[in-house]
Length: 173
Image 1 (cartoon, rainbow, N blue to C red):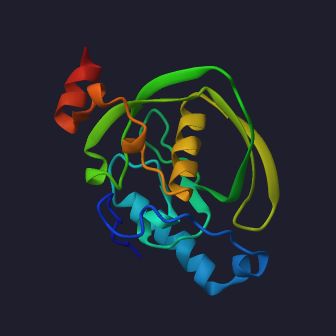
Image 2: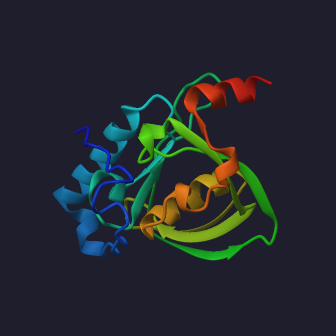
């Protein structure tokens, strides 16, 4: 079911999300949460990731679903109780947006680690440790910030903030 997005001015968006216990992964409530995350993400043309706190559920889970070059969505991937194991020293600046900030209509440059290694559970309770770099690392770090009550607007280079129209003109150059 499509849920309302909790915006940056709404109560709860800055709450720290709580860990999910293993029995919860087998519950109907958890399956509904996964469906709600996916349905809500699909309701946005440009969304690639969403955390539970963005739909008002303070649990440590986020979903990433990127699209290929033809616009076909890849398989959704759920990250439960993610923990950063290590990161690069290298920092990279790149533009980001957020569903909780003006429904992803505001963009700005954020400096983040180039790669990140995280451990997490998938939606079936299987444990994984994986390394991500580039845009994948950026998306994961952005979503991890949500779990800690941090929005990209807290760390954005304010001199680079653009609305959607300005951003689209900027990237055409």
